[in-house]
Length: 568
Image (cartoon, rainbow, N blue to C red; front, side, top):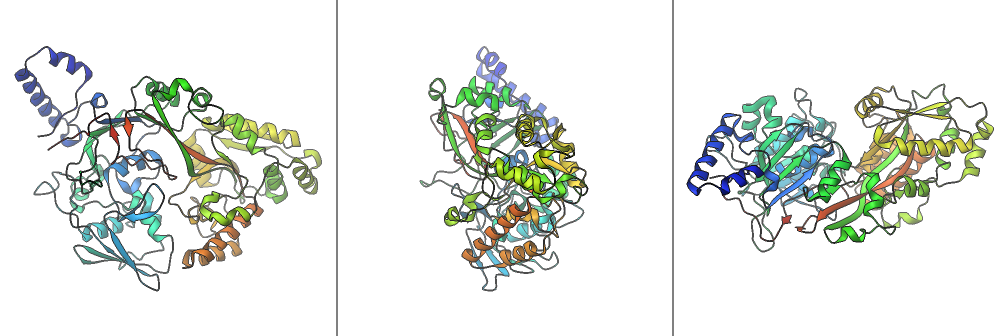
């Protein structure tokens, strides 16, 4: 029998009635909720007040619980709780087995053979004649083939596109062995398989629910859906048949459930966290950074008693992009102007005054330095603050002191408006006239895709911890996304093709660095800063591990004293 979450008001009322009456109420509530949509509505709102339930807020909406559409942080954070893939990255960003504890790669790099676990079961669901069934290699092949199906229109289509041929790329050897044959060697392939897009799902559930699979997910993950009221709350409950155990043989996850809310204002989110209504916040609003953090980056004393801070590298580069095709006829068509604008930014000051010290000045390339090897510290390229060099480049471009230079338009959204106004002021000191236009984030992104924006603020979060995930933004044959700048360079494209097929990690890193340097010389992007992950949890939360991909994996998180259990 499933335990139910309760409204806070329910508890007060139940204290005043007998245990027998309480049982009747629970049964009645269960019947009512089942009548309103079955499994997806079996748990009423207010779940987060229960012990063992991890409470968090997402300022962006979850738009789908289908992993094929896990294209943003909100969808990804939900998918990680519900599904598993063949492999995954641990907190140290090392690739490890998930549904496939081991795999082999042929000498030519074309064939990957995965040996699957035989103790994995899908979530209990009406799609199965016997309520659930074991996961097999056929499920993996189906899930991957579905990503390539044009009728699905999956956001994760690109993972296998032009890498695996749909007709014969996925071969089921037997129930526990799967072969994937590539069209050509592609070194980042295993890293791509760790993305939530590549989660394994059962055919029966997709066929039963059709398009409604987006709100009726069935996976193998540590949690399963309890309720999703779009735009308001997403409740997940513990999957009692989850295959993973801890080092002592105790079943995971430890938590009883997860309670997502969707308040768009980051300020409101932090206030709820401070008041004890949430267990976790990520990416604090700038207005609270000074209040919460000391000048050295630690917690202010008044918060240290109740909160725990984790801070570390985040594979996210914030940058400005120039659409080279649309820039024709504008000052931005001249590489010297673009370079001058990059030399004209005091990134350290920007981090101090606009980011309250959160972030690392992007004085290297587009790729975060940690993805280019430890020895990359001696491989110098990129831009730092040098107004004299910026002024010389402007003069060489025919705009001494900015005289005669037409105004350029920088488009951004409300969240980054203050930062862009800071940049505007910096460029004004050089005589570069820039107008900042505030646009709705969705409209801005669409204009980047269609090419209507010439100069825009953007960010790129790595899909996996490999420099290729950033450098693909500049590969000529790719459209937008990801090539929003419409970069076309025969040299870069050739290096890219060499790098992704190169089996020597040392030679591949050398190619990556050369490509990143070439991107900086062309200056179709102006990197601003490499972001940092900043996580705050309450003192009674344990086991939440920070990672550079900012993936929220909750299977080992504990809340309160005892480990919560939810037997079925």
